[in-house]
Length: 110
Length: 121
Image 1: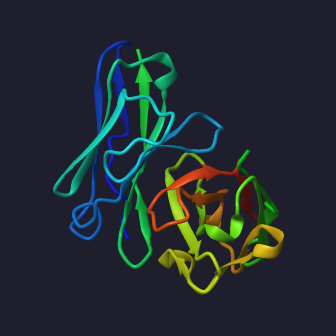
Image 2 (image 1 turned 30 degrees about the vertical axis):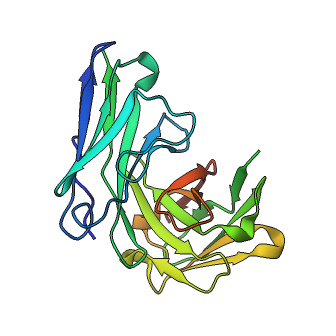
């Protein structure tokens, strides 16, 4: 299983919107609506922010939204805030009770 | 409060073995699939292994098959990862993670703080 492709870094100014892409294959992202996104601040454990492509867990801001088209999933952060500066990891179910993560994207708030 | 606490990490020589533990509290441990996810220094996350509620099914990433064994003791609310034939590529922070729901799901909503495994001579 190869890691999903994410941009290494994305940046934006406070209040702007940014989108992080997550590209897989027809064996993972393209085959299942089980894409999740995790936010990870430095030296902290990951935090689930999106699951099943576009669902938000209780307590997660609606500034975070997810979508998918074909083999590519996307995470959009609207109204960017300083606290959003973190690493973001996508993850897809890959069949056979296995999973594949992306390489991670560093979001910088300018 | 739902909590996962890992332990057992440390420095181990190449070819050596190590057993990681994760103690759960604040939820009915036996109702959830449990997982190990690792993160090499400066790298992304990597799913390592998953185990069914009763331990009857276990799944692994290809790179650890035959070397790592995931297990659990529901009477002690504990998850384990027995690692052997360790190599430098196994150096990482290892996280214990719980499935989001006791029903079938494909994501993890509760994570431990991680335990660092360093494979080096």
